[in-house]
Amino acid sequence: ESSGVRSLLCLCPLNCENKKILQDRFILFVQMSGKWYLAGFATNAQWFLRYKGTMGMGTAMFNAVDGDLDIKSHLKAKRSLMHNLAKKTDVPGKFSYVSRGSLNDMRIVDVKYDEYALVYTVKTIGDSSDAVIKLSTEVQEKFRQFASENGVLPENIVILPKNSDCPSE
Image (cartoon, rainbow, N blue to C red; front, side, top):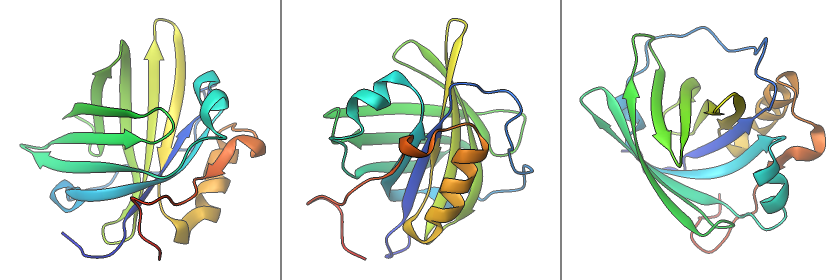
């Protein structure tokens, strides 16, 4: 595990057609293991519109388990701890998990293991879907551009403020 600060940013567009997803490539998921800081979110989803003004950085613990990813995350605004086992699929870099009644299709879009990961998640409940993207402060512009290209309104792309649980850079 790296001793540096590692960040995730999340994107959740409501309209999931024609997404610009980077080519899947071989990713060493064991290097994803460890603590990550949830540094930003981008989505047009209603839950985010309710909480975006009160959100601060959260944390996520990733552990590689037999090719799957065990994920424990904590979001300050919702004051909730979530635990999910993201199961690997036949597509490299793609995982699936069920959380709070939604089916989640998660892809690791881009990663520099000691700095950031860009994670794109499409959340489906019934016939409705949202998407989530995660990464670092050094790639905030890349995150903003990716979120914008995927239909998120500029006012709904938020870099979360640091809080007492998250280190300064």
